[in-house]
Amino acid sequence: MIYLDYAAATPVRQEVRKVITEVERYFANPSSMHDAGKKAKEVLEVSREKVKKILNANEKDKVIFTSSGTESINLVIKGIAHAYQKKGKHLITSKVEHKAVLETCKYLEQEGFSVTYLDVDRYGRVDPKAVEKAITKKTILISIMYANHEVGAIQPIKEIAAVAKKKKVLFHTDACQAGGLDLNVKDLSVDLLTLNSNKIYGPKGTGLLYVKEGIELQPLIHGGGQESGLRSSTENVPAIAGFTKALELAQQEKESENAKLKKLRDHFISEVMKKIPNTFLNGHPRERLPNNVHLSFEGTEAETVLSYLDQKGIYASAGSACTANEITVSPVLKAMKVPERSARGSIRFSLGRYSSKKDVDTVVKVLAEIISSLRKVF
Image (tube, rainbow, N blue to C red; front, side, top):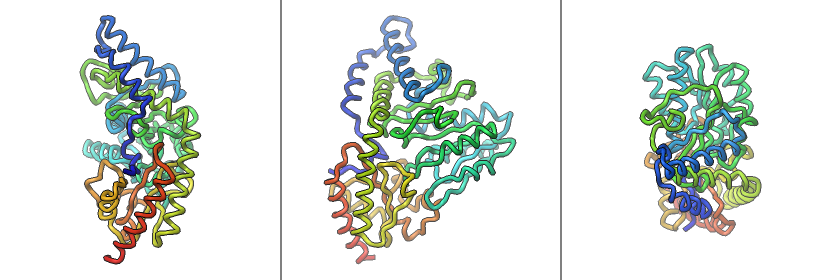
């Protein structure tokens, strides 16, 4: 098996498994008043403080643990919209966001909110000037992803944050694909930031939302008032501890891991371009995730190529796993104005810590054979 779909999900690291196993003995409800509950609560709060330190957050900033990146995104977009609607009912995002953002914004439009969906350039990047131009007196939130889930384009987050700050508009970034990049919220100058666990070798079913001090949110889930009243439900302490460990490791190792992945990524791209003609790289050539290789094989259908790869034990995807059963022309590629002939044959290969040069060379060889065979048919 050669797994090249790390952008969809990663295996849980052994170090993380160890933490989860150790913490599972603290099975009591962390809201209980007895000693068992207090021990679970202590693990929970230690995890929260560790995350704050990793993010370089202030003491009074909040870290809210959720079940996923999708839940965190829903919490921040709906939560801000409902908390600040007296000020205005206008939001700004981009056309290349994850469905968790786009579908939430569409939902709010049905409630009477207005949303500006910004265009992107041919690399899938947002122009900070376009963000500034879109801001009105009624704008209450800007939500632009840190790095794209399909083509890997890294957005100019600091520049967009500067615009938001100048205009006194709250700025959220979906950083679910960026767990191995700089997450210093002060350097990034973001007000709200979403992360999830299963993209960084942590357990599934765990996410978080960073909230800067003083920002109001309306909760999505009501109940016992856990997570500062913003996410009622008994916390999954072992998963949260595992997520925290995964985040610690991702940040500690980011320089060495990213250097390795970039070298492997660039080798992959170079070999494909040499051996498979009429192939195009999507996304920015430099400002992209170190593990992302998104290619268009003109004259092919992605679904067919993926099927043949699967038969060879090679696993990749045609885009976001959240829309994997809808293999049509991706909205991200449409926004980038990638021609349909190319877009329909587009595949995302995402590398990870267990990927090797041998794996990449094998994939390129198999790909060349598959593409050549299919083009003869088409």
